[in-house]
Length: 153
Image (tube, rainbow, N blue to C red; front, side, top):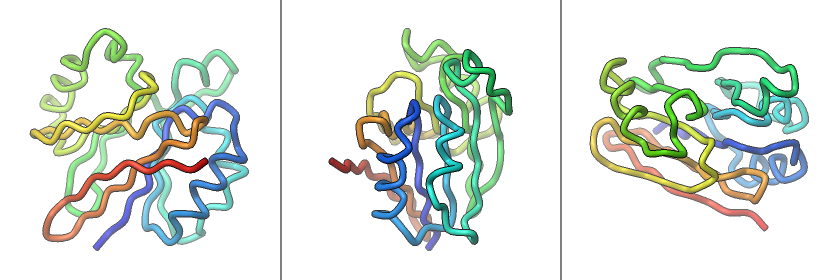
């Protein structure tokens, strides 16, 4: 069983991100879907956890440049990781879904909308919600894949 912690939109709220990380330890993988990727520096991530992070529109506005989209395989599942702004997520999720299909993704992780979301059809579309408000997501991959949302006060 692999455990993946997913966050997005921490927007400088490093203390909230640290609480999320501490609550969910241990985990095998950490994904930050943008807008606050530099907050990971202050999060005390487990050294054994693989970390993926993409930059969002706010990161770019703050001069933080990095990958805008990552396609990778985690625990035998193909992931598309992005912020969501490149695909107009505020105006609907159809472009995210189309890109997920184009990339052969089983799971598309995104942020940007500040709304928790999980659509279970392939590709699964999963938004953990805004970490600056204490929202996050957990994906457990074993024989099946389980998606859940969490909240810290």
